Amino acid sequence: MQRFVIRRLGALAVTLLFSSFVIYGAMYLAPGTPESFLVQGRTVSPEVLASIRAQYGLDDPFLLRYWHWLTGVLTGDLGESLTTRQDVASLLASRIPTTAWLTAYAALLIVVFGVVAGVVAGLRGGLLDTAVLLGSSVGFAIPTFFAALLLMSVFSVTLGWFPVFGAGSGFSDRILHLTLPAVALALPAAAVVARITRTAVVEERDTEHVSVALARGVPWRTVARRHIVRNAMLPVTTIVGVNIAALVAGATVVEHAFTLDGVGALLINAVQQKDFAVVQAVALVLVAVFGVVNLVIDVLYAVIDPRVQLGGESA
Image (cartoon, rainbow, N blue to C red):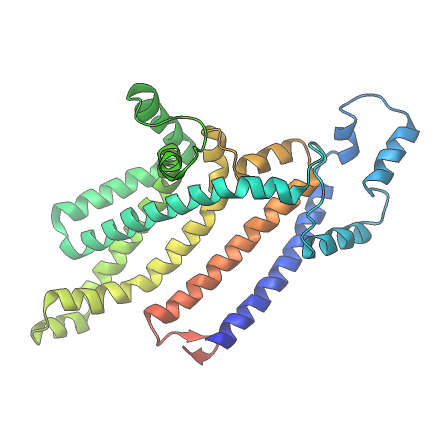
């Protein structure tokens, strides 16, 4: 297990290196230039434009600029924002807590409502199974931005139960402010997880080894816990991990709708203003999150089922 984790961390480092090059290059291939934004459409002399390009190193060769940026990232220097002239690392540090709270809250909702509802529906069947299938279909069909508007209209404007704007301060106030954004963010993912969990549980419930265990007098609770639910968790772990990793990217829409000062809102503003350093830093953070979540999923495979082979070695 230790060797496997070390290999995966090395692969993650290579992935981040390659992704950083692609992200850095893609920004320079996009329409517009940083200096055109800095002058705000005003007519400036060639001398002023040349001084701006020299100040930000825009006259250096592309590979040299990338190397300077990469070495800065490795030392914790993510550059300086072109719009606010603030350190990008400081900007991210002030925005990450809101996004982390939001995604953690949404991930908890996905696990509690998605996995639990799928397991119960798969084991019980009947009307409960039908209700979960119907609810998952409706939840998956509702786009995140529409769910956010609907939740705000009903629970904030009409009923006044939850605040509309801001992330709150303190634990209880933050939970209150982030409930509606977390529900809107988790709704489509929870619907997918519930349906896949239900399908996996039903398939395991109908297998031969479950019938043999019941025929031998093994209690239903033991069979359900050790043979059905545990075996069904392998595909469920994959889909839960993928959806939790996608929450960071999906939080962009929700943060914009609820006016949250998170990483997603920062990314939208940076793209609109062509703030290279901020866009590159946020994109790199998103890639890192996906890589770490994939590593956690692989490790969970071995925890759930030790028969799983990790990198050609038995766990």
